[in-house]
Amino acid sequence: MKEFIIPFSGLKTGKHEFKFKIDHTFFEAFDQALLEDADLDVDLVLEKVETMLILNLQASGFLNVPCDRCGDMFKMPLECSERVIVKFGDEEFEQTDEIIVLRPEEYEIDVSQRIYEMIVLNLPNKRLHENPEDCNQEVLKKLNEINSQEEEIDPRWEALKKLK
Image (cartoon, rainbow, N blue to C red):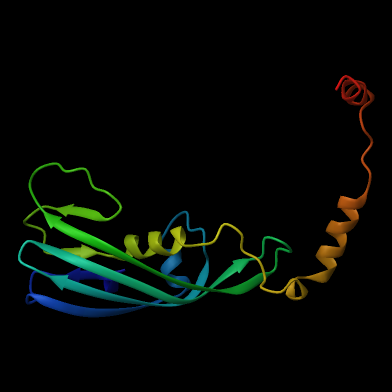
């Protein structure tokens, strides 16, 4: 994914803007992608100073995800941002989520992994249709039938409940 590699060595000191379009081809590049399709716009403002780079990433758009309630795919809106500092050094520093350390001889940075992680980490825990009426009603009806059926309780468990 060449479009996500930014050669920063030739850039002047100051702010530089980059725009990326995220769709299904982006997620195909990741082996264990949790997502398959999206329509996201990612804006990257790279601020180059003498001793480091500051990356400000901002994504907005829609992801195609399965509904946790009914299983049907739907477009979920997503807006997120992240700030990453890129430092240069020969020493072994422990990198964090907010700080990347590159060797002084490096002249470019691949932001694809950062963009992927930002999107995945900002997914909500529950992904549901905004309105339950938009869910697949046949699936919901079947789930309600299954949940409403009384399961037979093993008599051994019933005897243990009496000990309470």
